[in-house]
Amino acid sequence: MNSKGKKNYWLITVATWLILFVAWQLATSFKMVPEILLPSPEKVVSTFVKLSEYGYNGIPLWQHFLITMARLLSAVVLAIVTAIPLGLISGRIKVIYSIFDSIIQFIRPIPPLAYYTILILWVGIGETSKVVLLYLAAFAPIYLACISGVNRVKDDYIKSAESLGASSKQVFFHVIFPSALPDIFTGIRTAVGMAYTTVVAAEMVAATYGIGWMIINASKYLKSDVMFVGIIILGITGVVLDQILKFIERKVVFWSGQ
Image (cartoon, rainbow, N blue to C red; front, side):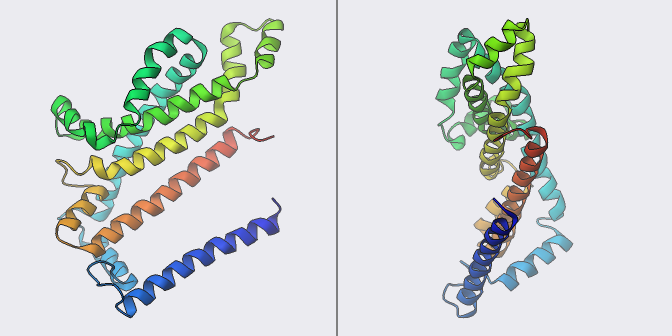
């Protein structure tokens, strides 16, 4: 796509958000929706400033944010260092695939809240249960992406490397792994999204801090302005994280799509 086309699409995106903002402003200005359900943009900004200055429930807003990010990133990192090796090996060795794939496929479609209470019984109500819940949400997309990436490696590439005298280890690290990297990055981006959508559920039970907890707690007292602040923070952070992953992917997997 040429630079002019990219510019036009960027303008469309900006215009879309401007229209949504104007519609939000008009709906609240003319009181088309009760303020308790839809606070005005001014109210949300004012609440954000107050939360930045005084915090929520005695805890600074930045600390709520960092706690949520620490839970999310620690879970995603754990998923990356465990799911990538297992997925790549499962894609190459059918015995390993037969052992683990059915288990992961069984867990994958289960909603996180369905087994969260079991995790609490097993590992307690502390940070461990929250991180494990996010870890389980992030693990499957990476694992499946690795298997897909391995299966899509052309046999010609493998046979060509072997015919030149490459060992199994060399084939794995110099042919299979690089070929699977685009799929792996797609899996990581999906995993971050899955873990991100689970973070509120993870902070629903036995938590006293975190952006997700702040949203849930504010909903109990109908503080819709606080809820909107939390939702907007999560939304913006999610976009930023995805853009960071895209940037890393472009630098690491520069040959993708060529």
